Length: 166
Image (cartoon, rainbow, N blue to C red; front, side):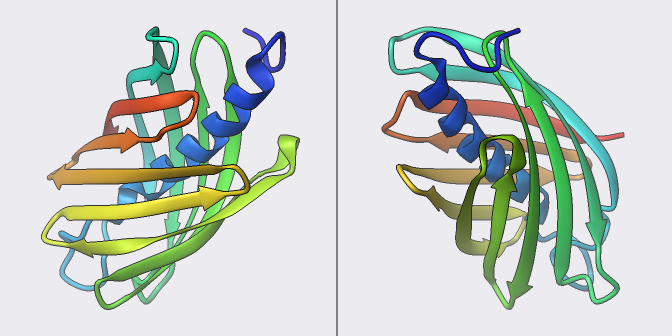
């Protein structure tokens, strides 16, 4: 598996942004007190990534989540890999009412950005950005299963992932 290589640096940078979107996938509100209650622990999943050249790749992800005592704050680590790239992300997300906001970083590439959006009724819609990258996310959560759809106009055009709580 390559971390960097001919033409993959931009793809890897955008993958970091996609990973940041995935970090937010645990925020769907189905808990009784705060949108993050019930999401502590390990999650994993897989799906596909569609690239601008028309190809698709399988992606695998593992995440660990720590919800604060109020149920309104979430810290997370996320590791994802496909056949061409990998990334290791951290995030810190807060909820205020139906609004979600936070920050993320990918240490090995010194990439960081922000995320914001809305959550309610087991569904979230979020905008994620960093220098040179932006994406929209729609997430639906039912029980211990989450489906994530991401769209972008960059090298990574779309992501479809299903994650389950371990």
